[in-house]
Amino acid sequence: MDSFELNKLIGAFLGTLFVVFSIGIVSDSIFAAPVPEKPGFGIEAAEEDHGGAAAGAEQPAEEPIAALLAKADATAGQAVFKKCAACHTDDSGGANKVGPNLWNIVNRPIASHEGFSYSAAMKEFAQGGSVVWDYEHLNHFLTSPKGYIKGTAMGFAGVKKPEERANLIAYLRTTADSPAPLPEAGAAPAPENASAPAEGAAPAQPAPAQ
Image 1 (cartoon, rainbow, N blue to C red):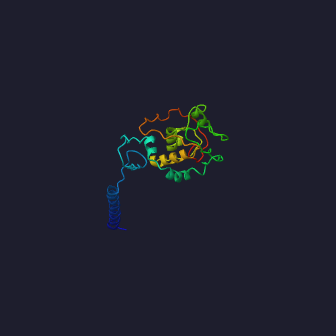
Image 2: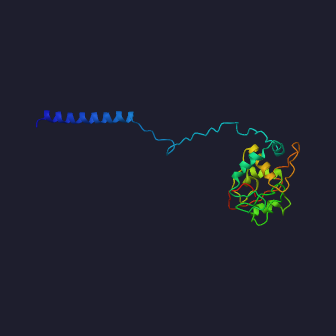
Image 3: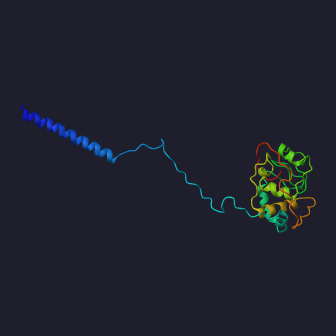
């Protein structure tokens, strides 16, 4: 092989190397992958928009139970009681079920119905029978049983609508030997949680009032 042929081969080889390196440089510039400032992947979670009033805005005060009872419908409350009937009876001499019988419940001493085993939290709240199921206690308890008496065995979520709750209480008032007088609509309500609620956990039961 003469020197001319050798020079041609060397030139071709060098030309190929030049093309390859040029392509590599161009590719690196096009598909550059900069190193992230922090390792891993950032995940952005959109905040839920719950709508309504801004956080911290004051909620309107609920109408007192005395005023609600003045316009309550006991017949409508009997329909609401169907939510309670799986765990309670409401007739005179009715049997205890998951919850105690509710005949004469208004103004009955709390945790006092014969033959029913009450939770420790309910017994503590009752303060030896000195606290009774007056309209205020019934109203607050039926709103949120576990929120009002911590540790109660009752797992019922509560009746959240004030008018529906008042109808239920108005019906329970009629399930008595002699219905308790209705409170005066203008009377000042008793302070919520007047009796300190008991602490502690207890097995949940799906019933509305104990």
